[in-house]
Image (cartoon, rainbow, N blue to C red; front, side):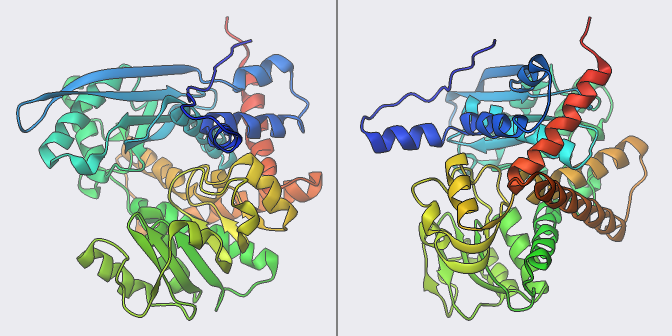
Length: 435
C-alpha cells in the first residue's frame, strides 16, 4: 500500500489547532470523501486502492529575474491524478498558500468532476507558490513562461491540458500556449483552455463556471419547491465565479442580499442591484463602499439566513467549527472543497441541500472541453450553442446525482462521487492492467 502522509506540520499545540489543521488538509478531505463513496461500491480492493493516489507528481523549483535585477526562486507543482478516461485536465493556481497536498486534492476532485460530467478527461491540477498581485506584468510573464517550460515535460494537447484557476487569467493561458508553441515550432492552441478568443478561446468560457453554478441552483430550487423569483442569495467571493453567479442570480429575479470579497463585504436585507455593484467593483477595486449596504465579513456571510449560499472563494470555508451556524437552505459550492467532511455531516443533519463542488462548479471544465474540441477541429461555436450544450450537460448531471442519492439513500456529495468513481473504475477494468 502506498502511504502519502499529509505535508502539514503543526507548529502549535492544543486540541483546537490539532482539529483545525487535520480537518483543513485538502488531500485528507479528498481521501475521506473517496473512502465514504467507495464503501457504497463493490470494487476490487486493488482497483479502489489505485484510484486513491495520483498517477504522477511533478515539483519544480525555478529562478525568475525580477525587475530590480534580483533572482527569486519559486516552487511550482503539476499533479496528474488519473489518465484512464483521457488526457488530464485541470487548472493552474497562483497563490501564496499553494501546497502539494492542495494540488493533489484538486487533481483528484478534477478526475471525479470530469467523470461526473461524462467528459473524456482525467484530473490534473497545477500551482505556483506566489502572490501574483505582488508581481509586475513583466515579472508575471517571466514566471509563467518559465513555469510552463518546467511542466512542458507533462503538458501537451493530447496528454495534459491546463486551464485558469485562482490567480490566473486568460492572458496567463496565452503566455503558456505561446511558450509551448515556440518550443514545438508551430501553434498549439489546444494545449490550454481559457485563452482569449483571439487565439482560439471559446465564447462563454469566462462565464462558464458561474453560469453552471446557477443552472445547478435553478434545478435545486425547483427540487426544493422554492420559486427563483425573490429567493435570497448570498455569495462569498466576488471573483470570476462569484460575480458571474451573482449576476446570473439577479437575472433569474433572485434577491442577492450579500456579497463578500478579499477586502470585506456588503449586506442589504432588501437586496441590491448586481450590475451596479459590478460597475462599482470595476471602478473601486472591491465591493466595499457600495452605497446603501452594511458591512459584513467573510465569516458572517456563511452564517447569514438565506435560501442559497454560494461559497465561491477557496476551500475549507465551512468546517466543524462553524457548520452549525450555517442557515441557508441550499449550499451551492462554487469553489472547490469549501466544505470539510466533518461539516458535511452537520449540514446534512440540518437538512441543507448541498450541491457538491464536482457538480456545482463543473461548468468551467465543461466549456473548457468545448474549447479543446473546437481548437482540435479549428471549427468554432456560437455563444448560443455553448450555452445550450452547457445547460444540457449540467441539468443531466444534476438529475443523475439527485436520482442516485434517492436510490441509495445517501447524501448528494457521496452520490456524485459514487457515480464518478464507478465510471473511472469501470474504464480502468475495461482497459485492463498493463502489462
